[in-house]
Length: 328
Image (cartoon, rainbow, N blue to C red; front, side, top):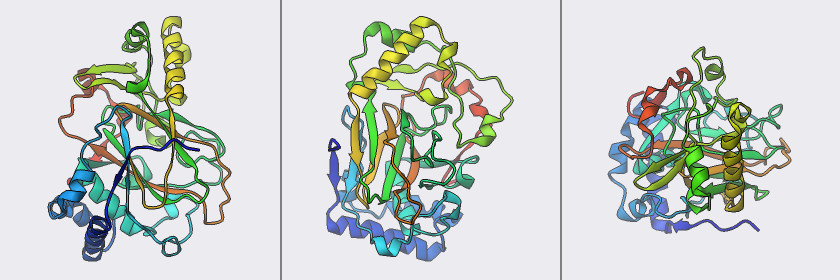
């Protein structure tokens, strides 16, 4: 059985308030990708009550995550699970707006010009031909635990995963660096900038970037404690020295030891602190019959958070520009 994650419940009144506001925004602006809708989010969020704000207070435990529970969606109204993110169109648009409201209450939603056409809400569905990739479109392989968009200095502080459908109880895995028992000498090794983290397969433009990859540290000390930047599937560890590789391997073992499995229910929103938690997904067999697992994903920055090394300001980010919701 999956290990339960901390749950923050929304009572029916608060859940209705949130979904009713999302429905009004959608009716006023026509579609969830409208620039006018994005610009209206901060003012709309100011009208939401304290119960919702309290449920969406910052992640405040060492495990670095929680599940917002209490939103209810109708599986029959949702329509079939799409076979690819590009065919979603307006399917589940209400829940895009709900996720954008949740994101805005927690920080600033961001998007990427080179991923899913610059959308602020991504659709994560298994796609034919992508089964064995290390991206959200895969299914038949373990999605290796990683921090989201680890290759980029402007990566999100928070990752939000909203469950549309999960008939097969497919688990998202998560592990916090602050629950590990990594030795001090290993921590010191991994604070060294030895090898780069390369763009993943969801960023084709970034993978063609001509600039030289720069090495980055895996671990970093902050006033809040250790943070990490981690994506072993896209890290050329073979180019590192033996001492660093050994420490990296022990970090992988420790993260596996403290990993939990979270099986989301429809309507759940999993909030992950991307500075301290790696996330992944267990393998599953996709049916491509309209009933497969379907998540929506949003990325959030928290302005002024002291969790990134100053040296990151000099990175080129492989030519990828982050977009913010109020400036599109």
